[in-house]
Image (cartoon, rainbow, N blue to C red; front, side):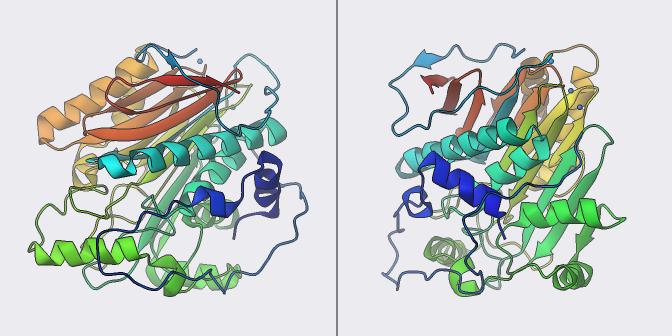
Amino acid sequence: MVHPYYIFLLLVLGVSQASLDVDESPPSPSKEPLTSPSPVSELPLVPVPIPVSESPVSEPSSIPEPTSSSALRGAPKIRLCKMGRVSPVILVHGGAGDIPDSAVQEKIDGVKQSALVGYKVLCETGLVLNAIEASINIMEDLEGFNAGRGSVLTLTGEVEMEALITEGKDLKAGAITLAKNIRYPISVARKVMEKTPHTFLGGAGLEDFIKKENIPRVGDDWLITDRAKYALEKFIEQGGRDAVTEIGKRPGDVGTVGSVAVDSSGHVGSGTSTGGICGKYKGRIGDTPQLGSGGYSDDKVGAVSTTGYGEAIMRYNLAHRILSKMDTGINAQEATKWAVEGMTERIKKTAGAITVSNSGEIGISFTSKRMSWAYVKDGEIHFGIEQGQHEVEKL
């Protein structure tokens, strides 16, 4: 369950959950509206300190020059983070793929809100993992993204989710796979990192851990959306063709989400959360929860979160390649572009990645048609979804 502190922040930002959801039903037969997750109890709207240990990590490099646009509607007055040797940054993505025109605005709105909430948490707590968890929680609650609610379905019509969270100071990580009926996979991954001697849990062991920690469950009536059902129906009708990316070409498919951040001391972290690929075999494990593929963090270099064709990302070890390139002195943007394009050239599959260095450099690259992204730094929010697009708005 999302922490009461994050709910408080949403109230401060003046954003209700209802305002975040976008009503975009696919052209499938009309169905009854989804109900709220009854297993999740109401939380008191009181700010509660988040006791977390944290960890430290360099100025953004060249991505397409920003284009000024009108001020963000309803944007909260966010005070700048306390400055140190690094200007704090949070950068999020909403998945790479063949995103249809009808979903573009929903994706942009979602990543912008995610980045704003994450930045607020980063400024208030000074902890990158808090910011990463909060930003991903936002997207896990939006059915326009393939994580948490909105996750795509297995061939047998089930939701099996995955998540990874990493921190760069001590190279700690928490990962989960084959997760069922939980609302916030990234939060459970963090609990694995902080409350067990292990890094990766899945299957029956993960179920035991969820019960032990009394993590609230959500029902399929809330978790499984009409879009996910429609996507699986179309996948089966088409004989299983094109089931190759989290976003894919099929109606109703949506995208994996991720977040990277650096605090004022140079500490970095990353998080990635997904429902996988539509029509996957039951028990399929993808790139998202795997260190070096779905994400990685190292205070000596930076942090990465990836998205795209999971089987190819695993084979190419995409996140690791980006940080290894940066470790040779290449800036975040060049290293990210080099690795993403290298994977596509070598394996002939598309991908995307977001990167932040330990000095605050930004890296954003994708070889798919589109990838939604946004970052907040120095009183501005930057965002885009098309190749070469870089919009900026003052906060």
